[in-house]
Image 1 (cartoon, helix red, strand yellow):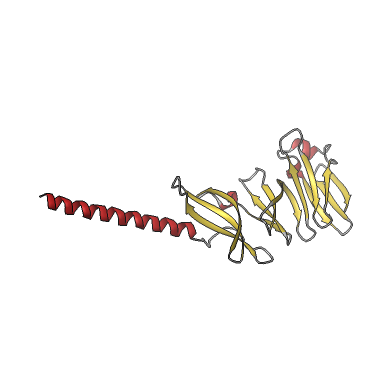
Image 2 (cartoon, rainbow, N blue to C red):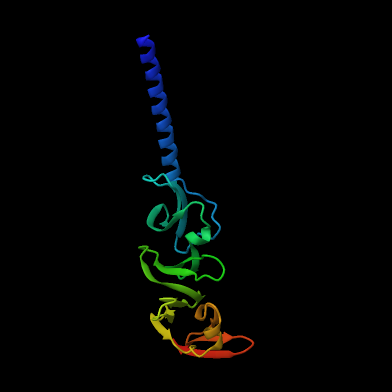
Length: 215
């Protein structure tokens, strides 16, 4: 009887160990697995791309998803992580590609600010962050807001080609900016960009405001 119990116990221990090893193996495989199906373009210039991965947290066993900046087969930096399966637009997407840098953007639904970060491709370092208003990719111009909803909120123009930043204060009297939900980010847009100037505008049925800024 004792021998039979001993045999059963050994069988149970072996089964438990095998099952645990299987689970561990599956978890490791999932940690390393790169998922190809992503809702947005993940390719960047100069041989870089964003790698989308789904995995289990080793401590909490929670299923997570993340985007990692990669060149070739080398991971440069994990950019963002969220619970799985949160919408991909919450996790992030490429807003603009400027060559050595790119805009990484997160969207949280219609009407909400789109958060963004300017990322250096070589290091993955965040060079700037704020709320998206507009961009001219060929001319490397970004229109964005810092400190949104705070007393020190500012609208800024970043000219990457000329390494110049301008704080824009010319639209405070606009009826659109004062009355519309979203104000600055929903009313002002980049009209055009030349080698010499950047033109911003507010245009609606009630008003038209044009402002020019030297590059």
